[in-house]
Image 1 (cartoon, rainbow, N blue to C red):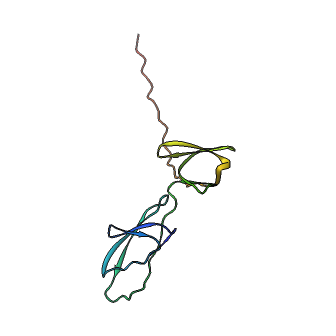
Image 2 (image 1 turned 135 degrees about the vertical axis):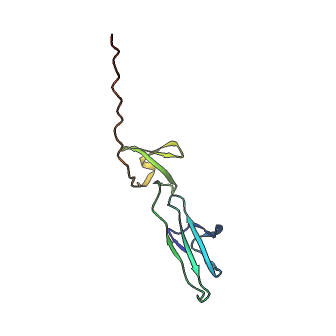
Image 3 (image 1 turned 180 degrees about the vertical axis):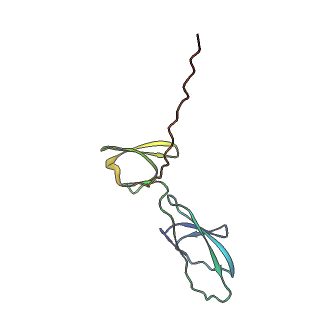
Length: 133
């Protein structure tokens, strides 16, 4: 079992099966493989193992892109969240609803996730009626 990126946790038929890469023996039948790694979109795929298949096959699965922004710090710490602002001196990352401020000198790399926004119609207030006097 190999995933891109490596080090994803995975389940076989809903049961924890470890971390990738890993060798797994499958029984004949249909199985569901689920992959998860923090910061990446989760993924799953069906696997059909036939009675006539030989041992030694392989499964490779690529997880979707990052689901949050990633700030990699110089001390090898990774901060996953939403980058709220950046300046020449600081970066503010919202992690689980709380803003965390970092000095840009602490940062090694920042990967921003593309966000798709849908335009919203402007909110208009109805004109208030003036009372007749």
